[in-house]
Length: 454
Image 1 (cartoon, helix red, strand yellow):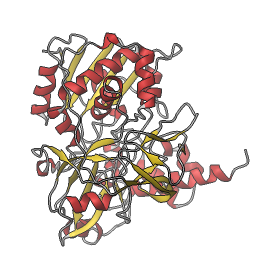
Image 2 (tube, one colour):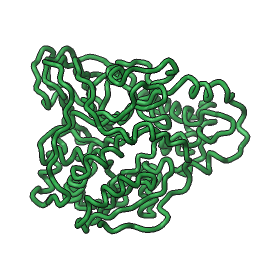
Image 3 (cartoon, rainbow, N blue to C red):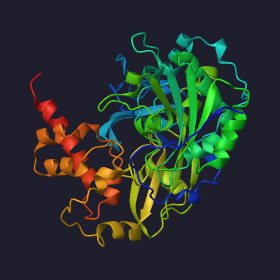
Image 4 (cartoon, rainbow, N blue to C red):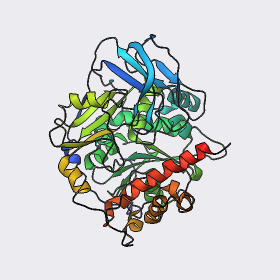
C-alpha cells in the first residue's frame, strides 16, 4: 500500500456547493455517439494556436495530425476519425467565441471504442528515456485535461534552471456534477498509474503524490491498491471543498507551499497533472496513440440520459446531447463544464475540445432561482467574498473597479490573479455577479493591450 500523507489537508477559503455527483458517479464509461462530422479546433490549449497542416478535400486517417505550429508552447491536434476535410473555417468556441477549425466528414460512422489496456500496476517506466517520453507527449498533442489546457510537454520537460522536485496528481474533481475523472480512477487505474510513473521519470521529480478528495473512498481504494509496491508514489487524502482541484489550492493543501501571486507551480519546483492527462500520457508513450478522444460527463437534472461517455474530440455538443436522449422540457441552460467554472453556450454546434470534461444542463427552476428570485442589491461590505476567496483577493474591490471602468485600479487589486472559481458570487448575499465583472475586466484589459503600440 502506498504511504499516506496525514494531516488536515486543506486550504484557506473555498465553499461547499451541493455536489450532485450521484447523478452519474455510478455510471460506467460508455461509448459515445458515432459521428458523421467532427470540427477539430485549432485553438485547444494555452499558447500559440495551431495552423492547419491539411487542405480542403484531403483524405485523412484516424489519428493523423491536422494542425500544428512551431511555437514552444503549443500542442498539435489530430483527427479522431478517417474521412475527408470538408472545410477549414470558423466554428463556435466555448472560450474564444469563434475560431478556426478543421471540419472532417467521416468515411463511415463508427462508435468510439475505448482502447484495451493490459499493463499492470507494476509497470516499469525505466524502459523509456526522458526525451522519448517528452517527444511522445508533444507529438500526441497532450494538454492539461482538467480545464486550463496547458501543453503537457512544456509542463513536465526538465528545466536545469528550475528543477522539478514534486509532482502532484490531481484526482480531486471538486466541481459539482462532474464524474469523468472519478470513473477513470475506477476503470483505468493501471493506465493512470503507468502515466504517473512515465511523467515522474520524464520530469525528474524526486517525489510524486496522488491527491484525492475524501468524498471518493472507492477511488482512494482503487488507486491505493494499484500503487501497492510503488514506494515512490505517495497518497494524500484531502478535504472535500471547492475549489480543492485548483492546482494552487492543491499545492497549498498537500505541501503547505504557496505559489507566488501571478506565478506558476514550476517556480517552486512543483508539477501538477490531472488524472485524465496521466492516462493520456501512458497511451501516447506506450501505445503511440495521440489525444483524439476523452471521457465526458453529461449531467444535470435536465438531461434525459446522463452518464460518462468516451467521446471523439470535435464531436458537436448537440450531437452528444441528442445521443444522451436530448434535454427535458425543464432545460434552460447548457454549460460546457460544470456550474461553477463552466461556460454557458448558446450554439449547440460548439465542438468538444481536449479540455471539455463535461456538459451540464440546468433546469428552468435552477436558473429561475438564480436569476429572478434573487434580486441584486447594493454591496453591504460583509466581507464574505474575502473569506472564501482561495487566492486571498478582495473580489468586491476588483468588481467595483471594473464596473466603474477603472481598469488600472482593478489590476492593482490583482485582477489577473483571479482564478474565476465563482466562490465570491456563490456566497454574496447581495447577489452581485462578482466573477462576471472580473471576467469582463480581464477581457477589457486584454483588448487594451492589443490596441497598444508594440
